[in-house]
Image 1 (cartoon, one colour):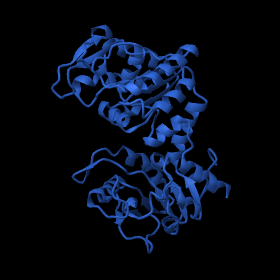
Image 2 (cartoon, one colour):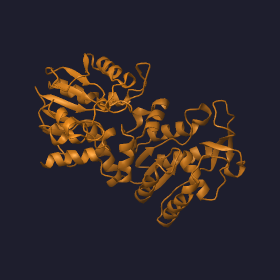
Image 3 (tube, helix red, strand yellow):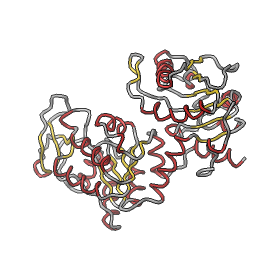
Image 4 (cartoon, rainbow, N blue to C red):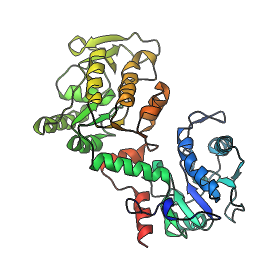
Length: 394
């Protein structure tokens, strides 16, 4: 057992039917997968079970369809085809599975989008029983959904003959737990993105755990305003300037570092053709918008990251989707990847940045979770993990 729950290492899946709750909620456009990071992360689990051999039933959601209604836009058909290509074997999509699914060891099927089923998001016992009735072993390998108490992530554990955590989920939980509870020092957290409001609890929790807290994006603008620095017409949250000031005060009083940007990249508007200018904070004009960090701040961040033993990264430090405002996030991504530290990165924008700048091989752990990653950083108990722990006790 690991972190209080049964893992796949504790069970023998040979000749068994294994129901895997995976996270294949990936971007799809025109029937083509745009980023298969989450799918590839689950492949070692699938290959291990196929070698057993086990019969594999895959369960996932895709997007946010209206629950209980089929919607072609959110069908898992493209995902099933993509997994088929990656595994080099047919993965049959099963739309009507309530009466059972027929398959043999060594075969793989995928149930249609679980959110097409009534009761999934409400954690309905009837749906959970139906899912459990399909298998001999239930495996949750979807860390990204662990913060949701739903039928396919939570309720099913109460009715399955055996319930365990998959290798991907175990690896993410153990790595994040080690980083938060037993970190190597110095420990640096990088928190970027647009809003303090979505990450206030994380910031308040992390400033107590880390040695250095680097903030970026709109979050940094709010902190700059709290520190009395000019930000022009930049995105920030006026109502949370006081909360940012409190975090800065805590850091000062407890020997923590929150180094704020010294120079920035500004423009008069957020647009693809906007003219970018590097400015010190003193040079910012009332109509300037801060859209990235400047070269001096990049150098300071590089030094901080390079001297860290543990790094947590969530969120970009600029509008990296636009070329002239991407240098800060690109440099940050390379610095984290080049660091010998234990580095953990998570969140949708962070994963997109890692993919764009080609640094995945240098990151110790790329968390597949967005909301789950953030809630774990907040110190919350994740419902799906609690359900596995409860199943292990029964």
